[in-house]
Length: 111
Ligand SMILES: [Zn+2]
Image (tube, rainbow, N blue to C red):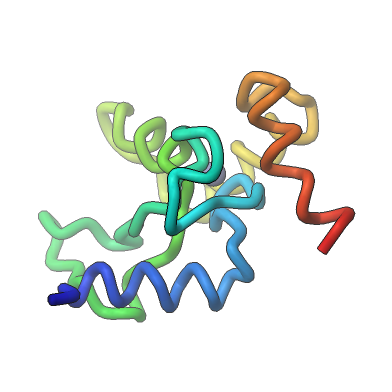
């Protein structure tokens, strides 16, 4: 049995070529084959609590780290704003520990 959310997550993962919607790093879906911070999760653009559904139009694939960090905030930032913030930190090398960043960046040069 595959739930709708699992299905959406897989499609979103493929649609984004396996890269996180926020940080742009490589994620893994079937594993574990990489760091747990970069496991692919389904992220609701509009939260369930605000009526967002589990369908593809509301789901993007995000790594566990980005997903958790966003929802740790008292008021989760808008997806676009959060993405800009995360990308800035990634480019400074300040988003994840170096070995994880290295794993997440690896496919971009090899694939
Ligand atoms: Zn991410």
